[in-house]
Amino acid sequence: MKVINLTPHPLTHVDSNGDQHTFPSEGLARCNERFEPLGSADIEGIYPAARVSYGDVTGLPPAEDGVLYLVSQLVVKACPERSDVFFPAGVLHDDHGRLSGFTLFGRLES
Image (cartoon, rainbow, N blue to C red; front, side, top):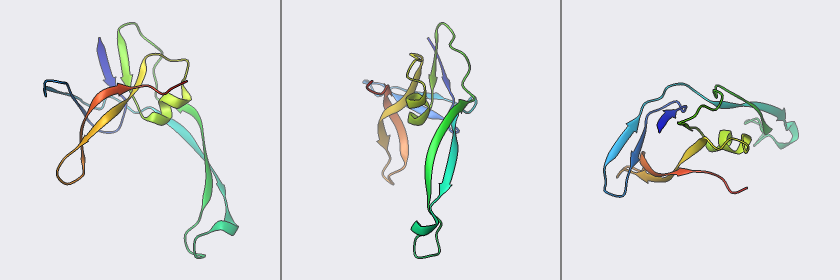
């Protein structure tokens, strides 16, 4: 099985034995964002607020036999019909709280 990482940064999978495999970024799959300004809800009149919605997915290739895609949770949620998209779950953090790896290939409940 080939795994293609379509997030903007490398992702390191850590298996149950502690072995690591890093998947380099090979592209970027994203959901288009739409913003609806909420002028009356601006924070302290200084910081603009908006209602955000997500639209079409860009950067995700068609399904291909033997290939899994690592993407964001938003992309997985936007593609419920795709069984080949997963997000990094069971995330691990280093001593400074930074993401250092993941243990599971995540899917969302339908």
